[in-house]
Image (cartoon, rainbow, N blue to C red):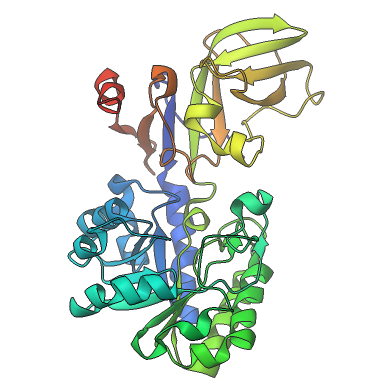
Length: 380
């Protein structure tokens, strides 16, 4: 990946959305909607930058949320359809959601019996999440597999006939994580084969997220053909909920070297942190790409890169560089839109990075900066 044309005086750390890259990805979304005849929603659990929503609104049908606050943000900031699913709802939450969301999904026969009448009385579309027993989570093993053993997500096949199918509008099934096209196709065909009697009793099927539609190598034609075949067989509306798949490779996390250390190996300490600013580096785990750097031994100078927190494990990874690092050097981590600032924290009082946008004309603007008051408010 080429280095983005960013001003040299940008304050770090900063998450930077590349608007041109986002528009490129949205072109794929529009193609899927048009050629497959399906709806596509933005999963705000994976990425939510309200400042960018105006760029996205015409390319998507709305947003999907994992709870009340995300649903409210979708309603207020995106302004189209709002779908919401959570494995459980707090007291009063469904009542409040009926004033925000258009489609409310439930998790089990018990839940839909207890809370479904509230949504139904408010005229909302009712969905049920089903555990389809199909796994194609290519990232992180059981940690990111919605259908792993003992998963809390979705009604199992053993309970499926306990559901009030005459009162359900949407069958929802989410079984993917960073899946390529044949994972998407496999899920669609599995549902059509294994859950056909139930599909024929609903108006729509939501195949959830995890469709990595903009990842290099994803065969969009395979997904489109699978959706068209499913719609032709069952005559239902099809919904997708990609999050990461919409914003993959659309932005960066800029960091600066603020200290150098040596303990067996050379160590560079950054003003960014795996623990607070890119938690998936530790949770998955994975080693993000840095523009101009390589893995150990590729270039002449090897470093462990660590964050500024006091957590021993706050290590981003090991890299090599063409020249020795110096305090003040700037590093650019790629693919840092998905699951980045939606998950970040202020552990140790570590400042959150700026949220910024790199516009197509090369101009750079900070959408939001964070300071002490943001840290202080989280502590009551």
